[in-house]
Image (tube, rainbow, N blue to C red):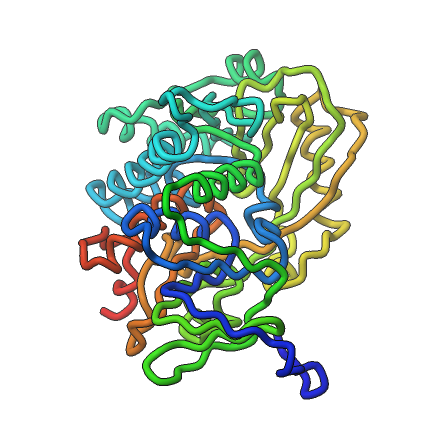
Length: 402
């Protein structure tokens, strides 16, 4: 954001001091706040969001809480080796377990009303429409079975029976995955923060950060309404990170994702699904609506950057996919179309760290389309790092300094 001389009314700007300033009011920012407050409830924490809480990628994604990363597991093994691939998968499994333990559990340790936040723990499917992808999925399943990761291989007939779909030659199901209403999950985390004893967390919405400066050993974070002074800044800005610091220009790339949703339909889909090498995805909401997103591969150039407009090419492809593969969705009325900006990391894994040569600015981001499946655990590891506890190598931004 830039502010003109005429807009810079210094007389109305309020000065606020805090111990930690978190930039970004989505799942990453509130996760970092949760774990900081869990570590030290006496910290004064300010969360600054340029719009309203969750209005970025958190409130615009598909609501998948899935394990792994942007590629099939066999490719993760090829890229990282089997030991680190297992660690990457376990990290995302733990993310869901941490959400259940700390956010989804009520005072009596029973899970809160699932219907209230649309939470379902039905697993997820990866589907192949061509044989070579099915071969990869079977390789993935074989490796995962050896590692005792719960997975199931399905043939064409089983997919048709359980998903009422056509045009898929086979697939696998990851039994532990989940889905949720992402904004309601975010508000549940916010409510948890408010309910924690001695919580000193304040939210400042509609306050886009203009710049971050150093002054007298502290950081000054300027917005149109407020000047925050803090000893520590956490950037939880994901796809927008390079707008605030040049460090991220070659590490986290803003990438647009597009989605549409239909009117409610009979419940025929067993669980959330990925297709076409994880590029496309669809799920049926607990209330019956069908959601589908993806196809950014059709317009790679235009699907990078900060514009959150939808395009005819991709929206038409989403409709055609539904009509081709899901007969029960044909002719359903489309009620919503939208897009959102994700943060894709250069190597497909998230980044947790601090800016080199500036130990007062920490960050987490680069979730590469898997923010709900990674951010809560990443927030915990960010706090571990801040308190000099070790974090996984695949997660640490220090991997780019080697």
